[in-house]
Image (cartoon, rainbow, N blue to C red; front, side):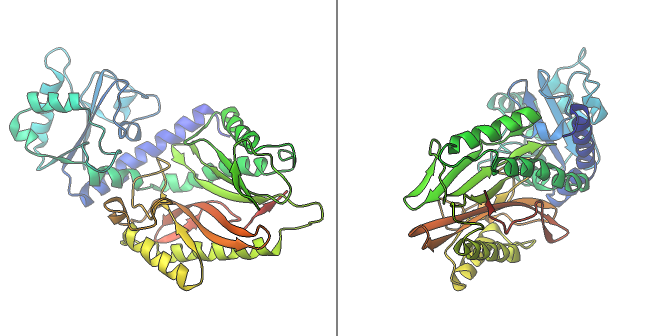
Length: 402
């Protein structure tokens, strides 16, 4: 695990690269001339944290960022940290903040101005009502008439990974996988004694000790002859354990589901039935990867993958989602576990290159060993890098045994 100082250094290197390369690119592609992100202290816009350095963790009173394809301006009080990334343009003694913003936007004279108001996406709906009302009251009409939603530019900025992020992402994934490996081990699992909650608490404590964070609570459940169980259930031999675990490290999220089988006393290896079930799950993963193509919508990928899976005799369930700066990230939704149909609006978004996904899916298998339908859950963090899918962790075809 990197030192706190080294982590901040890498995060800020990534921020600079993103501001200098990703931001101009997505603004051009989105046909946005100017983008303004306003935040009040303790009520920051979700975009604020993706646009500011590590040592500027909250807005100072009111922070206003003005972004164009060629300029980055902050219309707020002087701050030496922020001004390493933005040019400060606000004469505190001689003008109000809205007067300064008017002056900056008048000089820039953009054809349109993206603001963070959205009907569909939380990421780009962070402009507070108070700040919006202030702008509408104090900025001239010739400026406010240019306001448009920042949906396209905001989502594209969040979902696009720069070169440095693609370089460090496997290191982030390694930290998550170490915790999963340590959790699914003989040292942590004592059949007849250990509960699912014990393993969940262990994962949470390991994350805390490392000084990183989870973006959702670790989940451990199990399946056996009498169904699916979790929380306080005691783990027994013959159980099929399942974890769902995701960390946030270096401003990048992981999301992983892995399986572990608890061997019976007379078993030396994974039962053949589970080996075959995992092969079929991997086949469905491959089907989704084959359909995960640049320019296709999430709904097209969902429909084609489900249809192909069923043609091959699988009982597939697909709920893949974007992954990156957020765990449930910006980008196209590819099915929902609770709604196995095309998803309006969010499922209509297209796949772009240099993006990350949680390849989250399952197949349903009627296993003789349990005498019931059993979910084979998997989730792998992947990158779409130069048009090709790259897995961030090894052993996607493995069910671990303890």
